[in-house]
Each structure stands twice: as structure tokens, then as C-alpha cells.
Image (cartoon, rainbow, N blue to C red; front, side):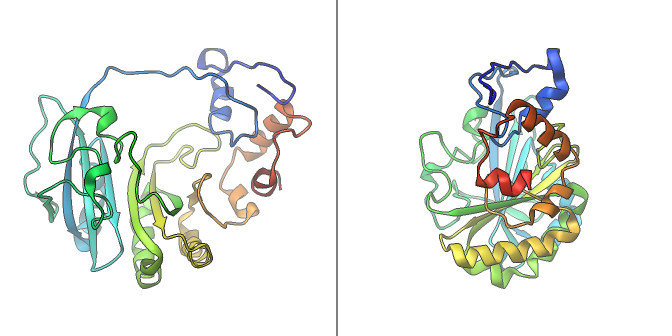
Length: 284
């Protein structure tokens, strides 16, 4: 529903470019009332978790480690030159092989784990290689259960895949500052898309996610520091999490922003959907 109250239907068949413009719209284009999804045939996934991946192994095998499954997540607290956990999620088919007890130097877990190792794994989806439906393995946490720690602040930064290892090693140097306010960091790959305002617009990315303790002042200072460290790597922040990048620098990272703003003005000419967040980060 547009700012004028018109009902607008967007589809690939009618205007794929318009659809790409609107999928990540930050609430600026209107109110979404219905969504039609493409689906694929259901499949099963197994989830294997490994502990204590040496940082040196990550340096030497970065692409291989992160491409070892349908979805791979690294969890780290930036301590002891180790990646705390590696979660490897793989489609179950006739060709799937056992990964064994060693994954590039990380050792297979002997029980289900929470990404924050000291917390109970009760809320987490089944691990230990037990097959299950995709919807009960691809998420880290069970439906109906509290995700992560539940009481937290979050920030996430997307860097082009070719810059990712250098970005991670740069942040590793600031680990003693990061650690006191951190619950856990997750590192994962995300494929490129064609959505205008997506952080992964036309570039494969590695996302570096931070789950923070609820200390806004200290965390805010750390986010500013992290953004400064990531500046040479052309990062884009997650729109729905904490960031402090200037609007002008943010705008420079989104080549389709001028066209997106023009579309906003077309569908919401009176600015009914504007708010402080959009005024600062989009319209300014």
C-alpha cells in the first residue's frame, strides 16, 4: 500500500527491476500486505559442529572452510588465536560423506553446543550429524525458543568476500578491546543478489556479526572503532542493527540509492512513511 493508498502489485513477470528495488525497502515505500514465495522441494540437513579451529588454519584454508557445507558459520570470541566453533550444515544426499573428527584442525564436538559455549544448548537445533528437515537445521535456534542469549545488542558488517580474511585479521588485532563487551561473533558467507538496497547487492559477502552485552555507551564506542578498522574493506552495515557510519559514506556504498530515493518520492510523495531513521540514513 503506497503513501497515496494505492494497492501496488510487484512481480518478476510484470517488472523484475521494480521488484529488486522494493524487496529491501526499509519501510520507505509503503506497507507490505501479502507476499508470494518461490519454494523448492523439501530437503534434509545434517549439522556437524567442531571446536577450536586454529586461526592459522583459517588463514591458510579460508575459502575451503567456509565452502564446506550448504551453510557454514564460524563463532569466535577473538581469544587464544582460535575460532571457538565451526557449524557445518550440509544437505543430506547419496554423496554426503562423514567429516570425521577433524575439520581443518578443529575437533568434532562430543555433544550439542550453544554458540556461546557456556550457555545450555537446549534452545539450539539438533547437531551431532543427526539428519532433520531444513527448517529445523538451517536456523541455529529452535522455533519457539529464545535465540542467542535473548538480552543483547547486535551489529553486523558485510564485507566483499575477497576482502574478508584481511578484515577479520584486522579486527583480531583489536581483540582485547572487543572481548570485554562481547558475547560472541558469528562469521558467515552470503551470496550476491540484485536487490538495490541489500548489503550484498551484486557482491558475494562475508558477514561479521557481533552479539554484545547490554552496555550501550561502551558498545557504541566499540562499533565506531570497528567501523574505522573496516573502512578500507568497503563494508556495509546491517540496516536493522547498530551502526554509526556517516550518511554520506553510507550513501557512497549504494550505487542505486539515488534511484531508490526517486522511487520513494514517487510512491510516497507526501513523506507519510518518513521517520528520523530514514531522514538521517536515506534522505539526507
